[in-house]
Amino acid sequence: MKSIYDKIWESALKAIQTRMMSRADLTRKLSQKYPEEEGYIIQIMDEMGRVELINDRRYAEQLISHLTQRPIGRLKIMVEFKKRGLDDDLIEPLLMAANYNEEAMCRKALEEKEKTVHETDPRKRKQKLMNFLRNRGFKDAVIYSTLNRIP
Image (cartoon, rainbow, N blue to C red; front, side, top):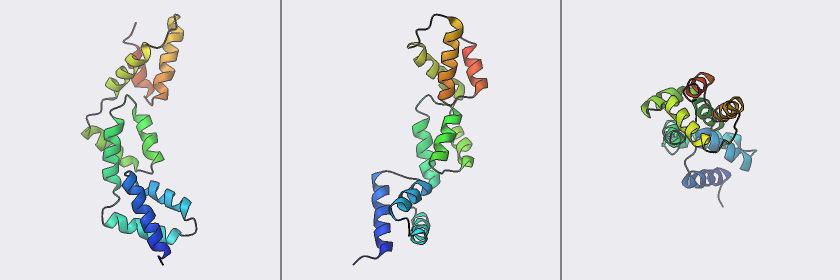
């Protein structure tokens, strides 16, 4: 008969075999499944971290690599990091390493969206584009700078 520790360990292994997870994500998942076993979950997370089965830095690098392929802003990237329980201090060095250029991403997002906005009033058109870019997580300064380049 397996102990509860062994069951939680197997659940953790199964979860990280499916996809890479942050320590916080895995802890949350295990806590939902085993709400009364917080002590064991902490022990298992510590052991998995020690043997490099979970590594938040490596996970953050993969996440940045994935997110910088899409035209989204720094604010959206920060939200994604917070959702996954990752440290904000990891973001800037990883973005620099990935050669992330927020202005270029904003232009790319704008180019994609312009094709689908059929508003004829220039003021309303600009407002729709601005709202779209804000929802994509771009900072206002970047949005204004990008929008001022279009007629």
